[in-house]
Image 1: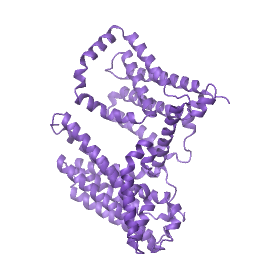
Image 2 (image 1 turned 60 degrees about the horizontal axis):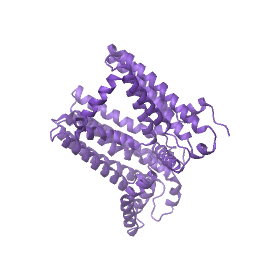
Image 3 (image 1 turned 30 degrees about the vertical axis):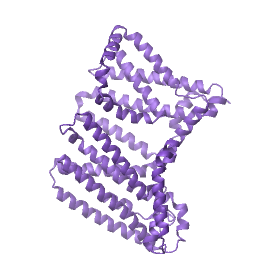
Image 4 (image 1 turned 180 degrees about the horizontal axis):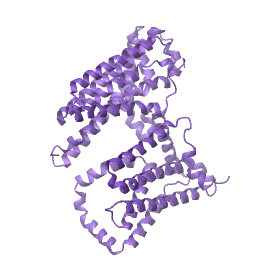
Length: 483
């Protein structure tokens, strides 16, 4: 076997792109261009900084894509049995890291007015790109990065390590180029250490990344994987969830009757799978506990008084809460597609509605799930609005209600294959809708009551229109059979 050419290995991430779903890439490119143009329009005097910073971000993103592709090509069998393949991967990663570091450092140093010396800029960029490469291999590093600043400064490590920092600074000021060369050599060695040689540790690491890639691909089509997809730690952490879900299943089966309410309770477990309301509730509860602990830790490290600074980020908190509450509901229509193989058996369940009655039963199931999620999320947003003294935060929930109604009340028989574009569309739309209502209330002074009435009226109109379409559609199961 022969190793592939360097260009083929570097461009593999682009050549393996999904040609059947280009809209996601086009949307990302469009948003990037729109962001750059908006920044240039709002701050024309900073055009050099905007263009230079944007170019650095784009190059860094490309570097992470290249690293991810090279790590995927580092298959244990190929690394062990193909001569020269591992060496070529390391050389390509090292050269691309060096060139990206040099170009990014040059762009920043030339475009930004207040920048440290070029050696310092070069070292900062090199370390950042090396960390990003390792974070691509071990995603847990992103979690470490998110909590590290708060813990570092909150625990007073900046003061305890001040003498060491002074010594390092003196060494740097005395011999900047020697220290730079030593640091670049260490970072270069870390880049080559990214790739395994086919041993047992490499096989385990590659299998773990393959599971994470599979989870990511399934997530882009709203198919949520269980905790077992994260390996042994995931299985251990997911045991309480599985026990609770198994207990609910036993409860439903023990009270099974050939009645529509009992049948739909059992059918819901099959149709929604990992997106079942019980699993979603447990996931949201864990997320809220983590958020509460993080906020409490930040409050404690700030000395018990944050001087109401957190209110400045109240809108961001509202978007996070709304995403946690609404995104699972947006995934329910796609779960009907993923469970269509089991739907043929569900038609044989005694008491299962047939024909138009089946469409109405599925629509009520989806609508009930969404309305409960919307009510709980909006109540949480109301609590946040009261705490932040900003009633306009309710606009996030009001803007999502019409979209939730229209998105969930779709005829399952006419569904198509879920795509990343269709998965991201409702999430992006509800963020823009909430932001638009928020801007109307804050900038134009539109009364919140008027916005609420408009949201309810639009939701009712969309719901009636969708309900009529559902009642005239072919039977729901199996999903997509009437396309």
